[in-house]
Image (cartoon, rainbow, N blue to C red; front, side):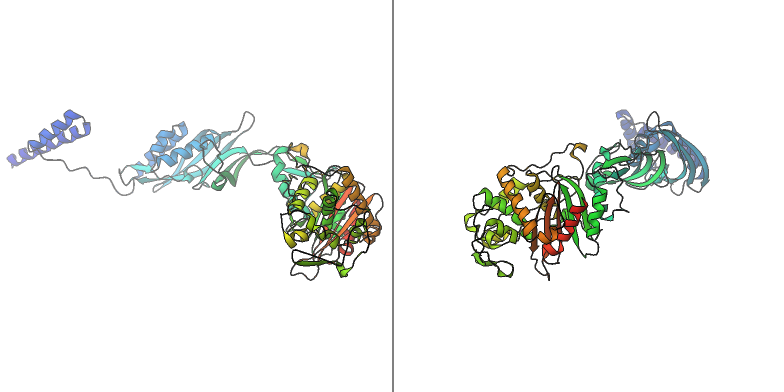
Length: 558
């Protein structure tokens, strides 16, 4: 028995040396280890990795070591005590830099199995004047690392804050855009409750111009998540994506609302909206010709799609104002000169006719315009190039350019067409598409003699570049167009609707045929002094009888 004991002692001793030299490392140690092995010494069996839940002592010591490292600001040491060093380091750095946590005090609380609760008291400082203390309770869980067997903190975002989840972080900064009070040109507040038809516009202009007002956003500590589709970079850690608020944790300061002044006139807005009451659909826009300022935007239904600014409809015979300017400029028409208005005219394989197949024998262009004679315009198609109307609408009336109104708009389209479609475009059919905004602008351009891009937010607020008509109207053409519209308002198709309107006035009616509708869309554009209005009442019939009274009432209210 004694001999066996000695032999065992020798073997254990040899194994101990071998283990020491392997841990020590180095070439000499390796050689010594190989020498020992070649001498027949026994190899040591690797020590087994501990398994099973950490003991109470391990949980306590690991949690205390982690909390102490975090509290001292040693992110590297704290993250090394977790099972996800990279994620832990990112989160702890973000808490200091993005949340503006100058320091944290961590107080250990109760323990249950592997979970340790603790209280966090974070000193948040946004600037020299704004600071607060963010107090809350959260917990961590100590687990055994399956690879090394050592106890570590199982990393998850809630270690930093109980409400924090993957993909989220805590930030302290100005909370979005400042609140905005939107007012009309006279300082009257415009609210969605009082003006529901302006709801989408008010939301849009606030979003676009909140940072241009004198308002100040409040400063908050809040949980945010990233919108990766936005592609922006935010936060001290370089996380990509524009932030979206999830939860506000603390308010360091309340914001002060800014005032956003629009060009709208609250009184005229109410009058315009009132004129559409009771109609299934309809829209109208009022513009000041001398400035291009939008004074009213009315729609019915009051909520939903804003057809007044964004609609895309054939404008019917109101478009003849633009076509007339082109014909006058080209020497193809003159208000006092004789002009053909036959019952029919065929072009591009299509036969066009007038309402009730009327004709004017030996009449003037002024008479044809006032009576809204289709063939008077169609008959000029043979003398026009396919792109003449497109170019003239853009160059003289600014239509189809990139208007920067201050809110979303459809600025009209006049595509180049040929044959019968080109001829139809001359009378506002074909593929010509407009809305009350663009057609009110046509009337305003005639009245003032100059295209002034419509605006609903003053240009001075952001110094944006407004669209300009490359050529504009000549003084002579503008004068003739005013004479044509005045004749229509006093003795033509618009006379009945405009009878109650005094002052310097002009008008044009329109009825646009639409496939699938029982009746045409009724159009009417007019001006009185320094006010121009365009309106459409879909599926209602003749423009003078259905849209005309709406426009006349708005003009009188203005």
